[in-house]
Each structure stands twice: as C-alpha cells, then as structure tokens.
Length: 276
Image (cartoon, rainbow, N blue to C red; front, side, top):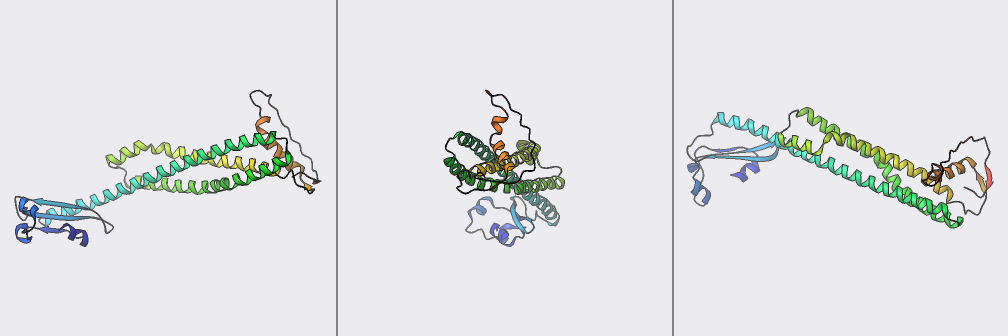
C-alpha cells in the first residue's frame, strides 16, 4: 500500500480494509485488523516529501470526502512547511560553511602576511645583494600567485554572501512567522551578527591582499638588483619601493625613534644604471 502511494504519488483509501485487502499473509493486518485506512502523499511541486498513514481499528467508512479534503489541505501545508524547513537548514549550512571557509582563508592570509614580513626583514638585513635579489624574486613570485587567487575570489565571495543574505531575507518575507525550530536556529547562529561580521571579514581580506601586493611589488623591484645590464630606471619608483620595504622601521619600533618622511619629487628623467 505504501509502495503504491510512493510510486503513483496519489492518495489511497480503504473504507472497509477487511474486505478490500487480502490479509492472509500479512501479520500486521492479522494482529491489528484495521477497519479504515488512509495513506496520503505529501507533495511539493510534484516532489514527494513524506507520507501520512492513518488507520482506524474501530469503524469502517471513516475517511469520507469531507475528512479527506481537510486532511489533503493539511497535508499540502505540511509538505510546504517541511520543504521550507529543509531549504532553510540547507541555506544555514551553506552560510556556515562559507563563513568557516572565509575565516580559514583570512587566517592563512594573516599567516602569509606575517611570514612575508619576517622574510622581508631578513632580506633587508642581508649583506649579499646578489643573493638577496634571487631569493626575494622567488618569494615574490610564489606569494603573488596565491594572493592573486585570494584577491580575485574575494569579490565573488562578497557577491555569493550578498545573494545568500537576499535569499534569507526573501524567506523572512515569505515566512514572517517561522516555526519554533527555525526561530531557535536563527537565534543560535546569530544571523544579524554574521551579516556584519562576514562583510568586515571580507573587507579585511581585501585590504590584506592589497597590502601584500604592494609589498610583493617592492620585493620584485629589489629582486633585480643583481642584473648585469644597465637600463633606464625611474628613480621615483625605486624610492617608493624602498620606502615600502622600510615602512615598519620608518613608523618606529619599540627601541627606535619614529621617523617622519616628507616626499617632494621633481620631474626627473630616467637614469641609466643597474638598479630596478
């Protein structure tokens, strides 16, 4: 009976089950001897969500037209509620997954920035300028690739998150009074906090990517210090690269006096030299 309803997606009713169903090999019917049976599929957009199985062991002809109409209406609403609950749970899971992924990427970005700063300090202090150039060039290249990947995906992550927020808002408009279970989930995940925190997290990731990109550009400039051939060089670019790499020292460390840099560049032509 249940398999028939699953297969056909149509309700099935027996007003006198003892006469309409063969019970010879069915231990359940022998034991319970139901008089009236009703099995209704819960459908949402023609997709089977669940089944409602009802039986009455006392009387026949229980499930007449009027009760059937009421049960059908209740079943339709139940199917919609179950589907909405499933979709909301799926959406919540996706939001949580995106948030965790962004937090992991932000942590990796911070670790990369810290590692880059440590490497930068070691390279600046190095006395072997030719070796410095080769090492820094390799590091800049290796760092630039993942930074470009992260920076390029931050925009998509922002768009995806905005779409998820829009969908959540749409569900809120369609279901202004969610079930207690859904309301409890909303309070547990603190959706209002996530709206603000994830946007701030994405903004900090973008800022970190831009900061690393500038540092990488400075490192790539210094990586060409060992070039054998002289060529035209923009002195202003070299000065800016040097200031970028020395920014932590210029801003002042715990044991150093803070330095203020005033820049007033002239209109200088390129200079033929070994620099970058």
